[in-house]
Length: 545
View 1 (cartoon, helix red, strand yellow):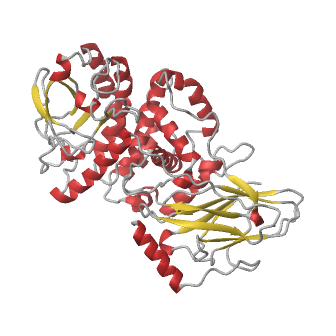
View 2 (spheres, helix red, strand yellow; view 1 turned 45 degrees about the horizontal axis):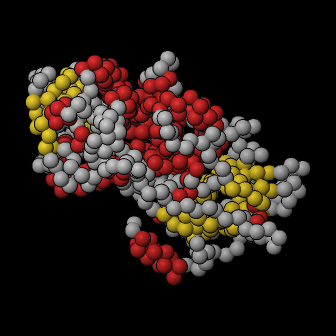
């Protein structure tokens, strides 16, 4: 579904220019303009500036208390990669008060693993369009399935470089076969001491068979079985390690699924359901140093993520994969907090990256993979949908939502609408507000603006204190406090600039002093002209106090 929650710069510029030449600049707002705002505490509204001449009008504050409004300018069309510069301008700007300015930060350079994943997802789409439709999951099991036997030899094609444009072969042997999983190990790695022990493989196979496989298939549906062997192959090969050269400054690739393996007309694939995994390399001969214990800890979380890609392999997959990691984590609670940490840490870390700079990242993009911050947005959005549209907090109720998202021909924003029965624009507007107010201290958020399974302002601190020591001796920086900090200032003095990225928003708190006169906001493009209707711009407003 990720492409679903899912042009170019020249096209955007052309649209902007044509808009400027055919429409006048927006006129200053007045007290009688459209877009009137009258809200009780915790009330919210979404103003469409294309219908209000860009105006939002706040009446005078006749009370003896300061009023506060959360403002979230947002684009909610669901069009992938759509963006536009914007201005949010108060009716008056006192000379003594400098204008506020949104801190715009460019996207970080993608680490090696993220760039590799992005490459694979793009390659899959190109392959699917070039060689034909992918094989869909079978409605019923074949009459006879012949799984591999321990000791079976097979030659596999693998990605030979970070672009997966070369496909060298490796010879591997089946070393552990379970009910749903068959683990093959590269013979070269075995000969060079880069393989897991039989006991380690038993542990992984049991985990895959009894917990991870059931969790993913219950939530997202069954995988295909185009090779008719009844199992998913896990190929452990040093070719995965070697995808990232030393000294591994950009991280490493822990494993991957490649949709080309499910396209029978693609000669570079294996016509089988395969997950590729790193092998132990304690001396760092191939690339990054990986101990056997480290591989045992990291491979399961990577597997449950990539297996979800395999289950879908279409426009519905990528967003749900990060939710799958959380699903795997909760299998170990209560009791095994260490394993829980290995599964969930990535989602929490990625979400923190997004919430620190939501104004700089897309929720809806073509690739559906993006950087860490984008992945954090995907997970947060699916988590919010599951919380809001499940009948209760049980796993079975949650699975109804995820299966509705996954097992359908709908894509993109239409898929969200189909699965939830609610317009995409409404869901994404509520999500944007919930990211700030769901567990805001001294504020009771409406039920429609809450996450049910997470209280992030508390949970970030808990994860930081309990999980970081378990997951890495050199952990990445993790926030000790909730990272979403809106800019704030007097509503009548606002002069904010930024960029609307499809699905995402910017966060500001407008204050109105006790007894202050009303103020207006003009929401326009960067040059004062109307924002494009196709962008579906919204100014979300929620009264905080």
